[in-house]
Image (tube, rainbow, N blue to C red; front, side, top):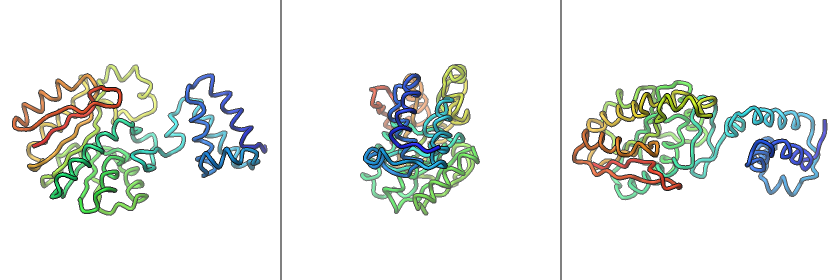
Amino acid sequence: MRISIADWRYQSRKILFAISETADIEVNAILCKVLNKDLAWCLANSNFVLDQPTVIELNRKFQSLLTGIPLPYVLGTIEFFGNQFFVDENVLIPRPETELLVETAIEWINRHDKTKKVVDVGCGSGVIIISLLNHFSQIKGFGIDISRRALNISKRNKKNHGIEHLELVQMDCLSGIGSKVDVIVANLPYIPEDYLRDLKVSKYEPDLALNGGQDGLMIINTLIDQIPSHLNSPGLALLEIQFDQSARVIQKAKNCIPNAAISIIKDYSSHDRIIKIEV
């Protein structure tokens, strides 16, 4: 079957508009991915006739989207902090709010030029630690995750971005880190397990990256317990949380690190999103 770009876009958008408010974005993303062209090219060459293998691949990805599979998994990539990263069903899909964590860490490191070691706990696809190390070639980075499959995606992204100063390790939180570090960043699972069952994300994204236990704070609390023995002074820890968890996380941090300066960073919707701990 041969079809023009314009006709494939029209037919796909017509189908997708019935179930998605972002049909235009999703159809265009699939088209650009398969053709390896930007949207401007696709629109300027709308009468270009697609060959059969290309149409088959376009339709395969489109059908995956129709089944409910999230667009980043369909594409196999996602943009984060201005760069492209590989993702699949073994890692959490990075959200725009997490870019605030990277921005905050960069600002702090710029003010503390003796920063030597940064660790990303629960690194998943590696988007946080790799985004940081893209800015700081002099810093040694550690990406930690309990999932071997997630670390395999981190390795792909590390290689794709040419990051040599990153060590990826399979472990639980900071249990195997022998020396202190200057910055700890973490987007750990924080959704309460009972609540998670009713969310669409639980169908496609890995439970290991979402399930925070009974109250959503099981793994975050474990990390906070470890901060005093693993963070240098001056040092920074940034923990992404669910919007309604800030009071409990702050109290836990105050109990474990009484001399720390603790603050909240709000996301783009003005929800509490990141707990900032400075020692």
